[in-house]
Length: 315
Image 1 (cartoon, rainbow, N blue to C red):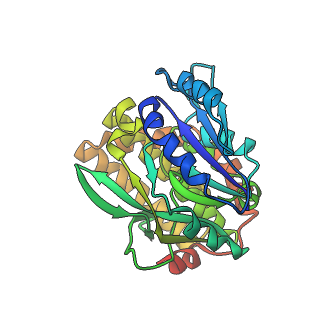
Image 2 (tube, rainbow, N blue to C red):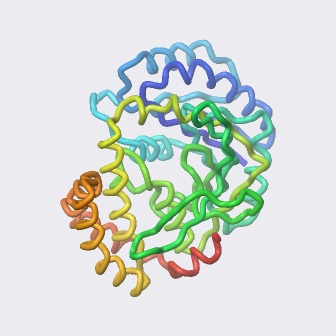
């Protein structure tokens, strides 16, 4: 079983210096196939590219290391950056790791054992999430449709089912990734893209699972989003992408009816409370409605399960 690890990077020089050698030492212990690491840089302004270039020159590991640069000076965003790396990947299994994720030395085997089931698309890790200097265990997600929107959150960690697998710390079968079209770049620069990917896969008849024995440490406070975007920018992008998700994926008639009924209510409520992030997010989404509807047609051709079946199975 060959493995391709894709690491999207933006201004993550310090994290790469800290974590890259550790990851390579883990992959060197995988004896059942070749391993490669693909670092996709998204127009970093720090010395990330120079550091990786120098590392490649000095690296004598059996784990191959490839750097993909973005010399345009403009960010592609998370989905675009990951898709670029996956397009170059040769492995049977993709492992996506953010630069601020540090896997434990034994994290690999528990992930890989699930892929003996041909219907498994993705396997998620247990995140030791560092939040306000405390460790919070995360990794399994659940959700429900409420008033026309998918409301998601963390689930209990003693079950294998999950609604989605994080693209910052998860493993994916490349054959299925390619078949369903990878990450949707409408969600650039970030948020909702991994929920969308797992949801589309499940509606296409595949499964996603959570593996609590595969543990990674996730230092969120050091990630690039908080360092490079204002809180308001993050909020409006998150709302925009929440609208995208419903418009792209919902097929249940009652969910869609509920969405159309409650959108005016939520917009008026947001206006009254001064929640301009939601207002801006909605109009940003409307501005790309033509592309959304085009993508929806492509996605719906793969659907074999209903929204209710996906939610029920993952709960």
